Structures are given as structure tokens and as C-alpha cells.
Length: 192
Image 1 (cartoon, rainbow, N blue to C red):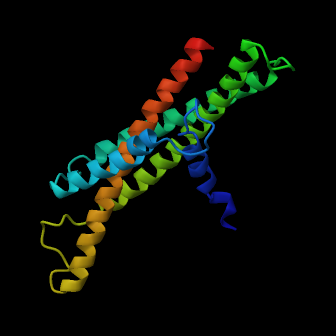
Image 2: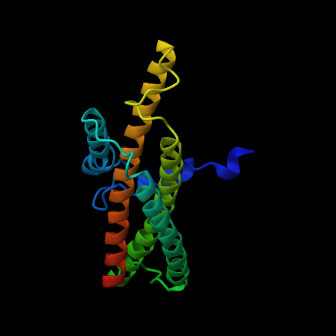
């Protein structure tokens, strides 16, 4: 039933694109793991600890993520057309020539760009959902309905801080993945 909306495959495929090309290992490179996961998480936690809130920027973030998400859908269609052209191009059956090797790398690169764009669309949808939830939450500093019950207030603060960290993390991940997509598209178009 949920298989139609299961996005786990997109996330796993995206993580596979963080491998080094010059390595036979199937593991994610340590540098990419740090850049795409650990660094945004550390920055997110620091921003929340320093009490930097999104309250006045939620509308702007929703607008910009929506526009960039739409742009990614268009880019996905362009890459899909490029994938059809690459599939139709002949490859030397021996596979020894530099052109054949270059073409195989190009095919792999285009498939990975397709996966990265799909992943970033998922991230944009998740970020938009969390920004909408965040926009309806009562800021912590204001008097609220939970002040009469200490446990509810603590749960609310925990949820508020968790959503804030998650939004910052997803915004950082979205931005870094967008930079990776732009770089990869540039390489394909410049050398293809």
C-alpha cells in the first residue's frame, strides 16, 4: 500500500552517489559524509543553541524552496531527455577505447544527476512540510496554552527545537545537494 510513496530507494540511491570514482569500494567517502551529513547537522545545532530563529523568514523560505523545487522538476525532465540520448548512443563493444570509457562514465554521471535531483525534490517537499508546521507553532518566548502544565510545555519545547534543527539541517542539505547538481550538470554539458 505504501510502496507507491516509499522514498527510501531515492535516499539510498542518492547516498550511493557520494562514492569516489577512483575507488573500487562501495562505501561513501568520508569527506562527502562529513560535508553532506555531519557539517549541516553541526551547523543546525549551533544555530538553534545560539537561538537564531526562522520566525521572520518562514514565508521567504517557503517561497524560495517552492521555486527551486519547481526548477528541479524542470531540470529532471531535461536530464530524463538526456538519459534517452545517452542510452541511444553506441558504445564500442570492446570497451577499450577512451571514447567508450568516457561514454560509460558519462552515462553513470547522468544517472547519478537524475538521482540527486530526485533526492533534492524529496528534500524540498519535506522542508516545505516542516516549514508549514513550524509557521503554525507558537514561538517559545510568547505566553502559550501549555504554561499551566509543565510536562506539556517541555514536550512542546522539545518538539519546537527538534523541528528547528531539522529545518536547518534540511536547508543545508538542500543547498549543498543543489551545488553538487549544478556542478555535475556543468561538467556534463562542458565536457559532453
